[in-house]
Image (cartoon, rainbow, N blue to C red; front, side):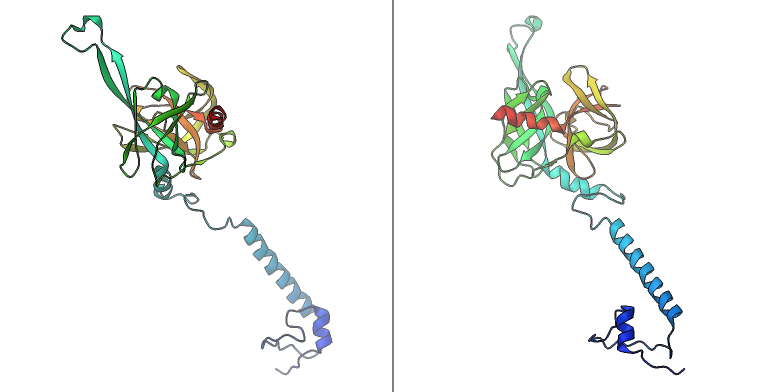
Length: 278
């Protein structure tokens, strides 16, 4: 096949990427003479290809962030990230014995109750948990994910939303990210992290079952309901979305040992604790 390269002015007028002056060694071999139909098809093909590439770039969500779940095959990366901010809480309470217990027994006894909490300010050692868990405590102890056990101090509470804040003095803490509970919708996946027995952590997966719920014994009337199975040691623990953000604090659990329903205080209420601190 014989052929010649088109005149440079023809190439420039066609606005092709290999116009005169290009340093590229790429040179096309075009059939002798003018071929407007060939040029039109080439331009249409180039435009279609660019449109497809632009659409793919717009639809591509970008690289997954650390702790973020997309194509879910396992929750291990998410759980491994969020549990670093979850602590176990041991609450010591003192109660009086019944008068019928007999004079040989001490008049008061100590009882331990276990729950959970979440670090929200690592540099300040601030932990959020459920107020009913720590209310009336005589001693407070916190167990960190690395095994350290420390005494905790009560800071402030919001009884209306059943939230409390504790403080510990420790280095190497990991803060949780606080999400917007106002954006939560029924059907959203959630991960609950709490305690099972003693300071042991447990993880449960579920969905948001309903919003704006209430539960006996919890003053907050705007609870998030979830079907994630939790036990008594999960009170005060965080409820995470699949972005690893705290969207609730577990307040109430139904059932004797395991729950068919659990209720969490919306994370947006945590700001009320900081208002009370100032």
